[in-house]
Structures are given as structure tokens and as C-alpha cells.
Amino acid sequence: MFKRILVANRGEIALRVMRACREMGIETVAVFSEADRGAAYLELADDAYCIGPAKASESYLKIDRVISAAEIGNAQAIHPGYGFLAENAHFAEVCRSCNIEFIGPPHEAMALVGDKNAARRLAKEVGVPTVPGSDGLVNDPDEALAVARKIGYPVLVKAAAGGGGRGMRVALDDDALRAALKQAELEADAAFGSGDLYLEKYVEHPRHVEVQILGDTHGNMVHLWERDCTMQRRHQKLIEESPAPRLSDKVRQAICESAVRLAKAAGYYNAGTVEFIVDRHGNYYFIEVNARIQVEHPVTEMVTGIDLIKAQIAVAAGERLPFTQDDIRTRGVALECRINAEDTTKGFRPSPGTIHRIIPPGGFGVRFDSHVHTGYTVSPHYDSMIGKLIVHQPTRPEAIACMQRALGELRIEGIKTTVPLLREILDHPAFLETRVDTTFIERTWLS
Image 1 (cartoon, one colour):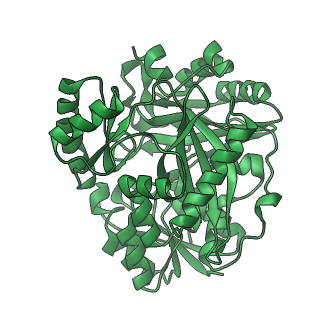
Image 2 (cartoon, one colour):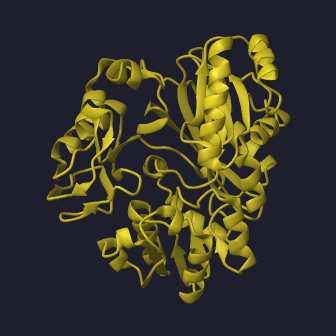
């Protein structure tokens, strides 16, 4: 087992990894930007090094500075968390070339599944359902128009190297497709350094269901069942839950087995998430793989009782998974609400500033993962998420009631947060009756 791990991230996920390491008897090395200097969670690390100014491109995304901090701090491994360098195959390769273990999948598998077009091709080869679309990249507008007319409008333009909804556009006809191609290419090139695009049939009113996978370096691969991430705004998730409601046992089993089959074919190990959309008829289609731990991993932890961060570390250290697929059962229902520093009454505008007072909720089945505290200043330089509120109860109605109670107890003063909107969503009849899809938030609150 490792003796020292560098955590190449910040905020909530950095704290989450540090806590897991401490319980495993592993020392930690933290890195921070000038904007995060003095953050309380840094005090829990055994060493902490400043790696640059506030701008992420000059600090958290600087591979050479992260590697230097690991070498100075005598770290044997690096945990990337999520975001920043977490899905950067080159970073994973550099880590291992410097004899520092990357706590994640092999860079070859990461590069394969990170290219959405290549991942779709692999999915087809191993019999995992994919959304009808182009056979490969569409670099010519006329070619894209021919594909769209063949599969039928509406279509979805997607960036091959994309994520988080960037480089994605819906087109309803030829004229809209021409415009969408130009917009998506520009956005994708600016965000990912690649303007490569492909087309998919736009599945209307889908649910978003993802499968947590976990594999070791000895060839063992399991799934830890599924999560529903349908409640999202412009492809940014707001509420997640496990197990996914309105999913038949037959589809649940098939979708989870598909995720494992794809991961094995990609030569994948460590933790990851295989994402699908499910239409109104129960048909499911592969959309992408997230080659890292997910923000919403706690809901899976709560229903399975498996600590995914500790499992990641153990796998990276060469240990075998201590369980088989038959050992993994789910118990009860877990919900997670992302608490963002945003003003939902003004288009979800970020709300940075100092938190004058915070009182986290508690009680049976309540978990609050956050790095913020009274006096903490939310920086305008990074993602607006300041915490995750997770509840676990025997049934979905009980979990919703518990979440409502916990959100009511949560006090965050000095900045605007998404809490009021989350409470409205949880109280909406369509959410309570699971009559929702991925466009529900836009239709109901943003129309």
C-alpha cells in the first residue's frame, strides 16, 4: 500500500480523498493555488504546496507543477479527483513515466473512452446499444446533412472530445444543423482543443442513467448498480439518486451488464462511470464513459456500503477487489443534491463571496460533503459547487422527505445558493411521481 499520496485537486473532493487516506493510514500531500491559500481543508494534509496563481490553467492544470509537487513531497501516487486533470490521458501517462502511480484507469483506456466517437464504435463492436448516428466524425456539412436526413430530425451535434454539455447542439432541420455545426465546432475547439464532431439522433424526453464500474489490475470488473441523473440543467446535474426509479429489473440488469462488457473491452480498471440515456419505452443507449470518480459517487456508496475512494486507492496499489459481483447488493434509496453558489433567480449566475454563517444539517441517514465553513470565501475562479447533501433512507418517499428536512436545516448566509430551487424541485408532483426527463428543469423553471 502507498505511504504518501498527492491529491491533485481542491475543495470538496480533495477533502474527501484526504479523509479516506487518513483512515487507511496514508499520508497526504495537498496542492493549492493562490486563491485557495489558507483554506482550512489544507491543514488536514501532511504537506501542502502552492503550484501557481488563481487561474486553473496556471496552477491545477499545470502538469509539470503537479508532478514537481509530488516529487518534492515524496508521493508515491496521485489521486486526481474529478475535473482538472482527472481525465487527461497524457497526465496519467506522465505520472507513470515518472514512477508515480496515477489513481485511475490506464492512459490507453482513458484515451480510448475519452474520444466519444471511438467509444461509440467500441460499444457497437461489443453489442452495447448506441443512439443511431454517424459512423464516424462528420467534418463536412454536406456529409452531416446526409446523415441527418437518413436518421431523421431532430439530431444532436456532439464534440468527440466533449463533456459537460459543451460542443453540443440540437438541430431540427437543415438550416439549424448548418448553424449548429459551426457553433459546436467553435465551442469544442475552444474548450477541448479539438473541433471534431459527430451526429446522433436526438432522443426526446430521455432519462439519464449511469452505471458505476470498478475493476482491478487482475482482470476483475464489477458494476455497483446504477444512478439516475435526469435532474439537470443544460447538462449540469442538480439531483442524483440510486437506484434509478421507473427502471424495470430486466433493463436494470441489462444496462449494468452492458457497462461491464464495454469496460472490459476497453481494457479499463479502477473506478469509472458508463452513461446511458433511456427513452420512454425503456430502450437504453450508450452515450459516454467518464474515466474518473464522479461528483455523485456518494449515492452509490450509501446504497452499496462500499467506499469508492478507498477502493480506487487499493486497486491502484495492485490489490484485488475484495468482492465479486454476487456480493454487491443495494439497500434502500439515496439522493444527492448539489449545493452550488449560484443565484437561480438570475439565470444561475455565480454567487462568489464570503460565507458569514453555515450550519450543516444532520440526523439519521444524512451526509454533508463540503469543504466550506463560516468565514470561507467562495472564489469566482472555480466551479460554483460548494457541497453535496446526501441522504439514505429505506424508501424513495422517505428519502425525499429526509432531503427536504435536511435542506430546510441547512443555513448558508452571505451568498446565494441553489437550495431554494432544490426544495421546489423535490416538492414538484412530476419529480415525486418520476414523470421527468433531462429537459424538465428547462421546461418548468427556465422557459
